[in-house]
Length: 564
Image (cartoon, rainbow, N blue to C red; front, side, top):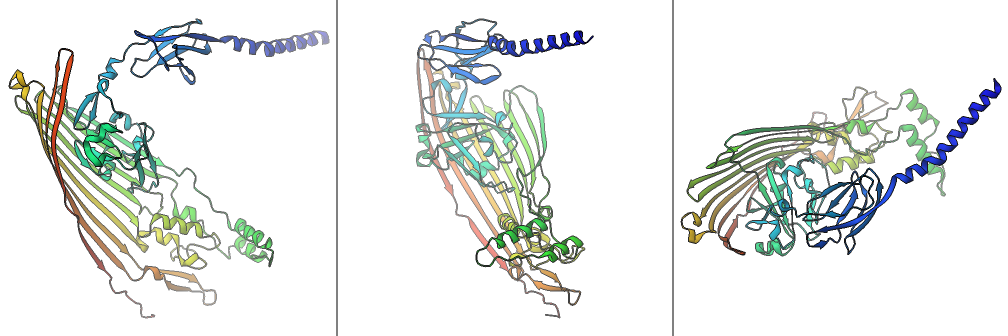
């Protein structure tokens, strides 16, 4: 019996040993070198990409002779791609030599790209022009279309400096040259207006990086971003689309303050390591007071910050038309809250858009684009940066409220007598409200002279008039408030006015700005056999009025109690 068991154990160890030694050999044998040549109808292609499908990190580029060598599994699939050619997937199927012939991607080359004052096929482009479709942008959920361009267009840099709702505090440039010129539906507009667009209304975006932007003059020194919004269709039917999202945002790394015992221990250790006078700051009596509840502490993190911040967006659009008239109508609502627990930091935005194109007569088309934006940003009277800095300065050794019922804000022991809960709460310290309303319009007439006579085929004219209006209405209201401290001698509470909040103060700022643009363009584009002739002549004038500002500052007399 014992001999049988020993024999089985010996056979088991022998199997394990064989598996351990043999397995690496089997795995290595599964990968083999595959080589070949990548070419097109004219010969080898230099720099074509050959990668293992599903494992893009395993790949090579073809050399000057179009050759490649790549080690992959015998059942793998190769992905071969090159700019301007259709990508091919080729199954290895145990082969060691695979030659690939790429064909032109005519669909990509025939794609139309928006350029200065017109459109152009990719195959005819000579300048540095990049683009992205609006359908690709909306894969990233963000309140700002500018942020959606991050990492999607080469040469375009976007970095966000603040995530505070409605601030749009970020930098945007092309090849580190500064802020580019923004052109929305053919009209030069501001970066702020682009940031407040509804991303679901955007059809595509083109970025002109070099001399291709020169047609816009000195304003294009840092490049040009061309934004085109959606238009209707000629399918003869209407389509209603709805898109709704709800997002719960969380801080990626919220700091957690130390508890009272850790805090006092750290203070004691720091002071005991002092060369001049090493003494304990907090004796055992302090520790005991916190243990038995004689002294109260404050968890400032839970008092100030919510666990998550909700964000919601709803978009409805109506698209349709026929061969004569096409229309697109869109409406969007966006709401975002900040992380302050009071809920007084938030942002709301409403977008409305109507793009209509109709044929008035043969060869004559009329286009009317209307857009409206209304947004409101609410914040506590103190800036979010000041509130967070004050939060960092406050330790946990002193309570946020003087009374156990948490009804009297405390100042006892706080740095500069500043209570972060009071600064965060609009009902206590006041608020700031920023309201903006935008109206944008553009009316365009396009006439094709070729419909009148074949001799003028390829000649067209465009006349456009645009009127934009913006109105800002801002309010800042500072409220004076009192803070308290428990008095052990009397058993009551000492009241103290927070001097920086006095007196009550309200400030109103209202201003408006308007812009008018007129444009006339003659365009010629015609092909004669193997020759193509094209040209453009245009005239444009733009006028902006200086903003009118009205400031009203009211300082109501502070009410004083009889005790004062």
